[in-house]
Amino acid sequence: MKKTSLESWLFRKMDYEGTPEGAKKYIEAYQLEKLRETIQLAQQNSIFYRKHLSKVSLKSMDSFEDFQSIPFTTAGDLQENPLNFLCVSQDEIQRIVTLNTSGTSGASKRIYFTQNDQKLIVDFFAVGMSNLVKGGDRVLILLPGQQPGSVGDLLKKALEGIHVKAYIYGFVDDPERIFTLIEEKKINCLVGLPVQVLMLARCRNKLSTMRKCLLTADYVPEVTKKVLQENWRCKVFTHYGMTEMGLGGGVECEALDGYHLREADLYFEVIDPYTGKVVADGEWGEVVFTTLTREGMPLIRYRTGDIARFIQEPCPCGSILKRLDKVMGRWDDLVEIQDGRFLDIGQLDEVIFGFDEVLDYDVFVDNDNEDMIELHIHIKTKTDHFDVLQRDVKEALRKIPVIQKGITSNKMKFPSISKRDTYMKDGRAKRKIKQHTKEGLSI
Ligand SMILES: [Zn+2]
Image 1 (cartoon, protein in one colour):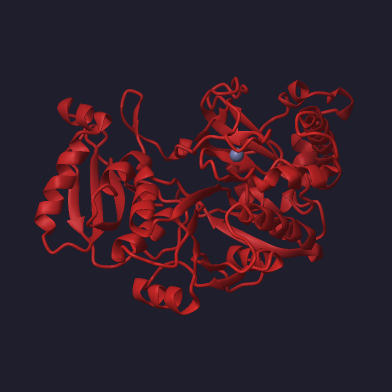
Image 2 (cartoon, protein in one colour):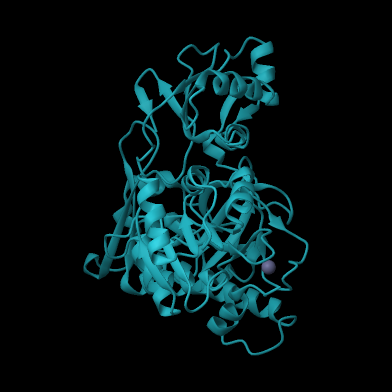
C-alpha cells in the first residue's frame, strides 16, 4: 500500500530530512512556531484580532496547552465584518468567496485569498490528488470552475502541474451529457459531491474507464461508497475541507480510513462543543482549526461545526501523520426531536440513499407547531412505481431510533414523502435538513 503523499510533502515543507519516526517532535515544533507567527500577524494587522486577542501574549505561548486558552473564532464573527479579518490591503486580495449562511439575517461570510494563499491551495490539491492519480490520468471535475480562483479552476491547475489532464464540468445537471464526456475523453477519475456522484452511478451502472472517485465537500453516506464500488468497480477516496480552511483540509490515503490532514498549513483541534475544552485524542467533538500559512485572512481557532475525532491507531499506510475520522455531520444542523435526541441529514442519507431508485432528495422540517415536528421529504427518482418506493422509504425511516421514539411519544408525525421532478441544482455543497419557520424558509 502506498503511503500518503502528504507525509513527504509535509517533510519537504518543514525542511525535515530525518526519519519518519523522528518527525513527530519536529512537526510539533514547526506547528507551534507557525501558530506564534500567525497570532503575531493577526494581532498586528487584523482589526478583529487586535481586539479579540488583546489579552493574548506571545511571551506566554510556549505550548499547545497555552494555545488552548485563546478564544475561538466563530462563523458569526466572520459574518459580522469579514473585512476586519484582513491582514493585507484589499488591493492584494485576488479572490473573494461569498458563502451563504443559514438564518434569516441575510449576512454572508466572505473569505479572502491573496495570490500566495491560492498558490498554497494549488500546492495542497496537487499533493492530495497524487494519492489517487498519476501522470497520464484523466480527471473530470464536477465542481464549479469557470471563474479564476474557483475550486474547479485551482484543482485543474494543480492536476496539470502533476501532468494529469483535467476537464471542468461544474455541478451535475445533465447526467447523459456527462456520460458522453466521460466516454469521449476516456475519463478515469471523477471529483464531485457525494450525492451527485451517487446519482450518476445510479443512472448508469457501468463505466468501463472509471477507476477512482474523489468525493468532497459534504458528508459521505456509506451507501455512496458501496454503490460506486459495486457499479463502477471504483476506488472511492474522500476529502475533507471547507472554504475557510483554504478549501483543502485532509484527504484519505489508499487505506481509505480517515483523512490525513494538511498539517503544513493547518493546525487541528477537537473540542467539546459545550465546554470549549479540547477533548482527549479519540473522543468525538467539534473540529477547530487554525491557519498556519495564510497571509490574507488567517483564522485562529475557528469553529467548523463539524463533528469528528482523531483516530489514535496508526494508519495501515504506515504514515506517522494524524488522521481525522469520517466527519459525522454538523453540530448546528442537528434537529432536536425530543429531550436531547437529535436527527441530522446523515442519518436520513444512510436510509434513503439505500434505495436504488433514489437519485436525490431534499428534506424540510416543519416545527411551527412546537409540540409536533413534521418532516417533508421530496425524492427525485427513476422508478415508475413511486407509491411502492414511498411506502418502503416510510417504513425504513420509521426504524431510525430517534424517529421511532418521536412518533411513539407523539412528538413527531409520520414523515411525508413526495416526488420531485427536477434535479437539485442549487449548488449548495453542504446538504442539510432545511427548516420551515414562521419567518419563512431558512437554508
Ligand atoms: Zn494512511
